[in-house]
Length: 233
Image (cartoon, rainbow, N blue to C red; front, side):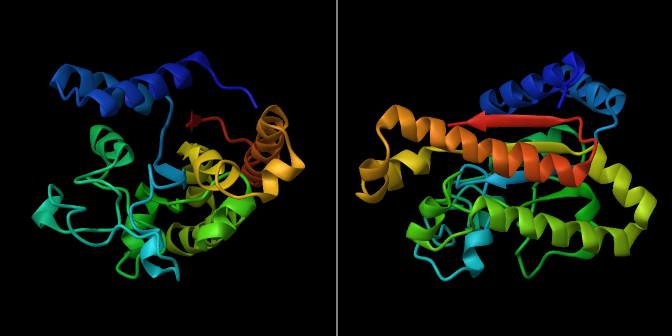
């Protein structure tokens, strides 16, 4: 898959501005210009707690962030399932692009059909590229997130039609943020993977999984996806 320099610059701009809370009008205007030039249609998110807005709320897992003090600086000081006091980086990116102030969780029972064209998050806290990482905490694996992505496309087609849905999917900004749990909750705590892999070999194993689950499964489903931003923590 090829990424144009313009798309890379857009991704870098979005990342830097969300991390450092740069909200100058000129910078936001520039971001929206870049997004418009590259036909960015929405934001679709895959990953772990760094980008999970509350999917874990509906799972049978102890890894949840839907209680105080989480959310104390969120709108109305409500805990939403985000593992933060306020909004996530992906929320700030969405607002900077002029979509919505937050990226909703795909599994949120309160998700409305009219929210779908602006993007959703399939992320699940405590997950990783290794399915075993997700299984440890009973959260959504990458393959399960990709399965929900297929459901998202079905709902989107019913809402806006085949042609417009295809445009939205093809031109979405894809954000993938995960990887730390594969080490912190898996390799360094559980005995299974260290018995199978040395640390360098485990890193290679994760890279192979990332290639399979993301580059093959996701790219193949999209056919011609041309925009993706990856955070590998």
